[in-house]
Length: 217
Image (tube, rainbow, N blue to C red; front, side, top):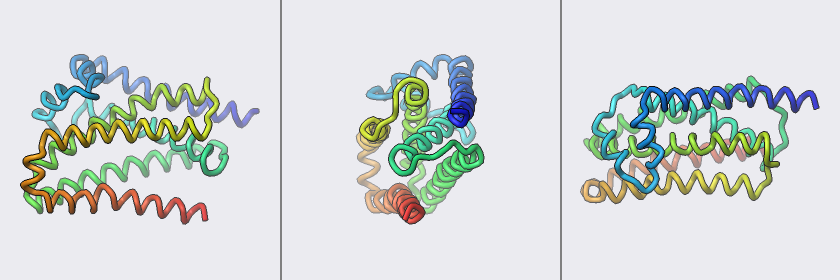
């Protein structure tokens, strides 16, 4: 019982931190936050804010930090339910959080590098903004879901798979939206775009899956 209370205390701290980050996003970027909430099925957000992309963007940074926290919490819950029941370990949790952050940031840097090499910067910049926006939206959606899974609803395998499916659906919608918007540019650079997808979208997750399965073997 004591261990469960300690775990929930740490979860509470990180969830509150996520709520603070989202609240700051709403307070500091009120109009953008309102548009962000409607990003699913509405290209207004992507059209308006993709033109004002910055390498370091305040709104995206705040939402990205919430994404890291939300995904890390859900990953812990999912692992405990689907793979091996585990007690909360703060050191491990922080490592997971930093690993997820490092993976995403390294991928973005490599994607920008390859875009420059293949001379498809315009296409990849638009795609990265779309992908980042939908990833951040996934983190936003996971925040209340994590609260429910920790304090209200008992996690189960069907529920975990449903949440995973929801997150995948959100990002699939983002990919389709981006594809439809830039399909002419994509078809003009189809070979390089497919090469990019295989190298930096599919490959890393296959490697990650292999590492996880080997770790649990």
